[in-house]
Length: 333
Image 1: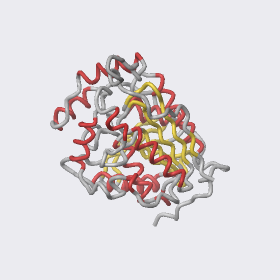
Image 2 (image 1 turned 90 degrees about the vertical axis):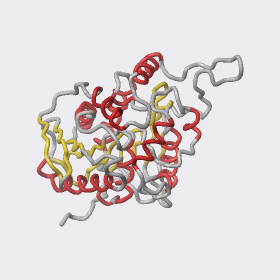
Image 3 (image 1 turned 90 degrees about the horizontal axis):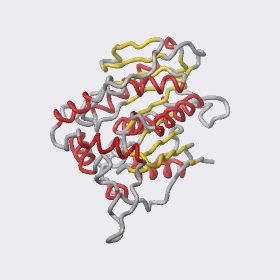
């Protein structure tokens, strides 16, 4: 039987400040700390339209330090640059995480998500392979998902040498990287033991209620998301662009979907979790109130809590007693 957990799930009645009845100001759904960060980040972030300005802004915020690792190395996975994080000695059957950074498919990279990858590796006791996939608009769809599949295949080849179990490979990502992780699980479910999706965009049509509710005032705007989709390209109806539109989700690996309550993408994530559960996929949904898109990498209690919970979930993927424990992909040639 499928398992859908949604701690903290709220009814879709939360409104942005000032959007209540005339003369009535509704409370800010963001926590005070999150609101201060949101406003500061918004003030320094360009609007959609200038990819170079957006990349410069993303690069300027890449200085946060993460925990120390036993080793960190940059290498090449079938032509795709990757960074490998090893948190330290562990059992020979450790999980391996292929991590896919966010940034609207147009910005960010290995450095921007270095601290997140370090924290996740430590929390999960797993080796993390972070992929520097090609970016749009220079390389539109399907360049990024093809790069990710290449990295997944190479990571499975490396797993034993890295002290990991090739049958415990998890695809993970935040924002657009979460989309790529979901797409990779759809393309190669037999090669993936779990999918870890942090606030992913899952439907290029952007028709959910949260798109309108949190369209502006919460850092990640609906206008930005629409522009990112335009740069990325691909058919909005194609399931490898919009996983929420896949006709059949049965047989996919277990999923943990982590969402921010005040996010244009919230309802897409909830809808995907419900569809996975209805298809018989073991799915856990964690909805964090009072925070906005991108909270994973911010100095907020919810970010640290989400990383700890994600690490615990990854550590259990493929273990005896879990629904995926007997999933073993065929041997690589």
